Image 1 (cartoon, rainbow, N blue to C red):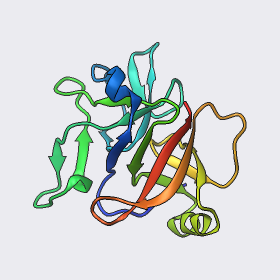
Image 2 (tube, helix red, strand yellow):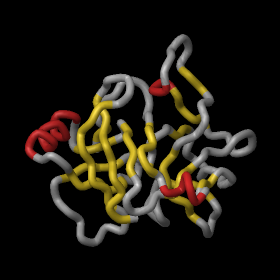
Image 3 (tube, one colour):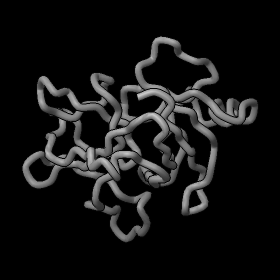
Length: 171
């Protein structure tokens, strides 16, 4: 599995998130040991039994969109932001996703950047499923057994780079 080639780190832009109105935002849950960095636009989950944020699908999905913490030296723009995990100083902010929510991100995975481009050339929209690494894996095949499903269209981010418009189809 490969991440779609981007410059810098993950970026997210909210279009509509029900959690903005319902205030279903997780900001007090620590991150599982072994996860060192997180990026905006990641799809994450909360393991309630162990009270920790994980990348594996164990709950409803959450969208990572945290405050800016670290930029690469001398760089400007949100695509140079990465959240360095430190469960004692600051915890990441996760927005609970619901059916119908929509956002733009550049964190998409597939066989390769070229294969993803070819899928989008043949299809206006694709199905997306959590890939276990915090990204949305795109495919032209529907997974009838999936608990979480996205509809993904190729788009443009605010910085004019390739991005993806994502709608939550099943949460």
